[in-house]
Length: 155
Image (cartoon, one colour):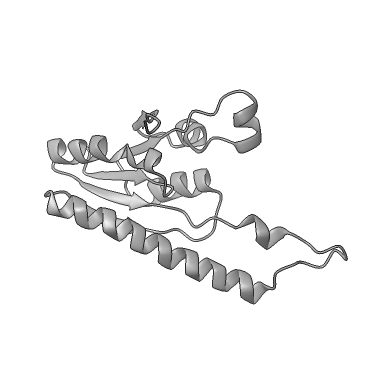
């Protein structure tokens, strides 16, 4: 039923708490996991100097994206390797710089994803307005089955 399972990660230990649930679904349904983390635009890229000129050049921003993408690939590959050692198929995907929620939904639609797995950090009220909610966006826009957990804070 769930052959291709998209696992949305953000590099945090909280987000990684979705992994056991996703891996279990993959085992039960004979599917594989697609680990996804989106390259985000660093806020410093948009900062401007007092004269209104961008503080960072386009070349600097491109290099920052490349560095971030390489770091993300290393991070995802380490998780994928651990999953593979446990007998779960896993591949890694790093969409280019984008709004995280939209990138997740677009990838899922364009790549025959059957289930999306995501952890929510649980922002509500003003926190959701200020920070947005990736999980909320995915829930509202994906049109696919979604497994959502609210991770437990580290003790």
